Length: 595
Picture 1 (cartoon, rainbow, N blue to C red):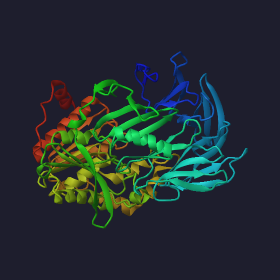
Picture 2 (picture 1 turned 60 degrees about the vertical axis):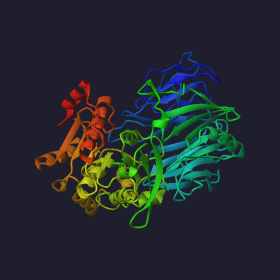
Picture 3 (picture 1 turned 90 degrees about the vertical axis):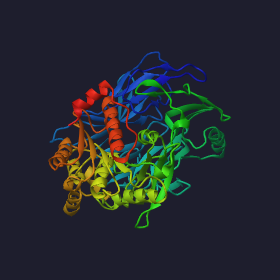
């Protein structure tokens, strides 16, 4: 973590290493809160001492960071589920924690606390808790919960943003409509939708609040194209000036009085670029523009002119549904005769955004056209788009979306129909295996990272693992609401019958499979079982297993090995460029982990 004094101070290293995924200012600006996987760290912004652990996170007495307390200057809010034995009644607690070990209990409940909002006097004003299949919002009187104001029944989502001066609360969600938008809940419980995507296409992705009064200032919608919407004419005028300097960029704004912090992202921008925006819209980079931090070290930023463009696209499925995705076109290449790689995202309840994509850029740099489909079931495009999958994640409707999008590109002169491969990780790896198994005439090879080769089996194993898609709501409940019911014997039988594992004998194309021995989401035994079947049947299968890796492959050498093996397979099967020879260190890593 770096700290820079404004307006023109030099950046200085404040913390050499942290596993925190976000940085939050305390209300009084004196402290920096860094929530990580195991602890909430607090740092004095002036560097004059007081640094340390504010609270443990995770563990048996699981604590989850909610945010900075909007009323108490140096406080943070946590939700705790204390450790318990089977005979005890579980109790969830909302805590205010402050430097020096001070803790204040704000609320205790027999049901999971999901979210909360504090009023200007520091009192708990709004509480959201999980009840059955819903997140239920309450307006708190002085004692007791009172009456429920609204319920977000899964898979709908609601998130509290903060209280408004007149006693209401701002919320991001879609309890009342298809698209997630900005809502205001008045003190009397009246719910009003204040804003949603002006294009009528994307869910609300992020909100920038005023640091003084908590009012929403900017709304971000960027599922297909980057959009930042200002809620006032003054803010819009200033945003226009910023856009004139950063046209087409995906922007986030953090408001701070006269100065704004502007975070720029883009399809050709590796990493993020941070700017300081003055009142007249003039921009000053917060770090040297040629550098960004990756892996904890400053790196040279690649030349944006040398990076391929990523274009939004639409196609119509055979059942008439309009679908979305992206195609990345390599520079200086006749795309009609270029090899095409279909890159499928994981989840499946996730999405590809219009930002920089590591895998797509690596492949485009080698001359491949890259297609990234947001098939039905993808998020960010409304509830109806998610539910349209209807749980058909075998060789059915969802996979058909991917195949039809690929054929649409080929029919419109993008990609060589004789040189098409499919790649992906997690659900994307499963889809890649489905592709080469059931569409060998289209896909000439597949690369599958950490794939659930039997998707239904992995879904069943999720149920007892204590995992949650919506906080406080069992995974099985959320999955049923999304159309995938592990308790539906007929549906699970259909997924099993259509799985790559059950159809291993039908495979006629080469596959590369990467797995982690400590994968917490896709049990390694299912992957090794699938590959063993392929090898027993004499199929062309390459298997790389890092015994120490989890679902998210973090080891740099393993990631390098994965890309090297992918390049080599694509070279051999769809005539892409040959990869550079492996270094001695990489070759040793390959020898150790290839099976």
